[in-house]
Image 1 (tube, one colour):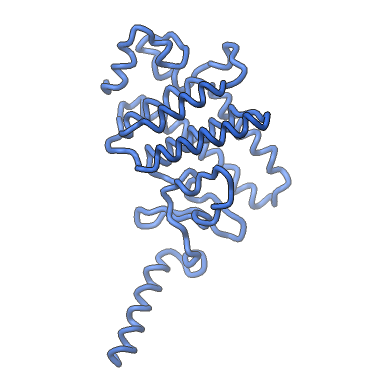
Image 2: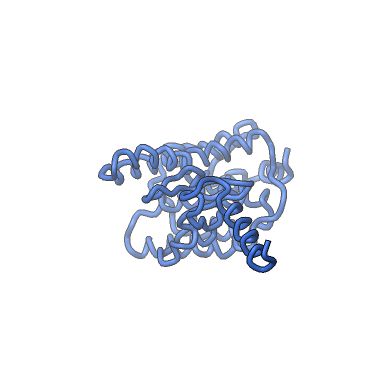
Length: 253
C-alpha cells in the first residue's frame, strides 16, 4: 500500500482526510473516487473547500502527493456530477455543425469521464506515479483558485466549473498529457495529436487572451499546421529539406 494512502487510512479522523466520508480501508478508493457526496445532501461546493483544495494542489511536490490531493478533491463530488458536465456540454453545443459535433462530443467525454476512470484505475492498481510535478503547478493552482473566486463573485455556479479543473490537473500534471486528448478537433480541420512521444495542439499558444485558460499550462506543444497540410512527420521532413537546400546553396552540391 502506498505510504501516503497508509497515512490517510491510519489517521484517527478518516472523515476529515476524505472530505467528510467515514470509510473502512476496503471501501476507501471506491468511496473517495466514486462518492455519493452530493447525494448525501450536499448542494454545492463551498468557496472554502475550493480554496483549501487549490492550496493542497499547489503544495504538492511529487506526482504521488498530487494524486492523493486529487483523490480527496474528488470526494467532494459524485460520479453523477461528472456525467452532468458532459450533458451540459452536449446541450450547449446542439447548434454546432453535426459532423463536427459528432467528433467533438466523444473527445469531451474522454477528457472528463475518461480522466475520472483513468484516475480510478491508477489508484485501484496501486501504481503510484513517480517523479516531481511540473514547476508551474503552484501557478496553475493559483490560477484555478482565482478563476473560481471570480465566478463566485459573479454569482455563478462553481462546482462543475471547479470539477473541470480537478480532472485537467490529473491529466496534465500526473499523466503529463494535454487536457484535450489527441483527436480533439478544432474548426478548420486541425486537431490535437501525438507524434514521436510529443503532443501537439493547434491552439496551444493562441489562447492567451482567454481568461483562466488551461492552455498556458498544457504540456502540448504548439502545432505549426505543417502536419495538417503535409501529413505526419512533415516538420521533420521540411526541416531536413531546408538543411539540404542550404547545403546546396553554400557548397554548390
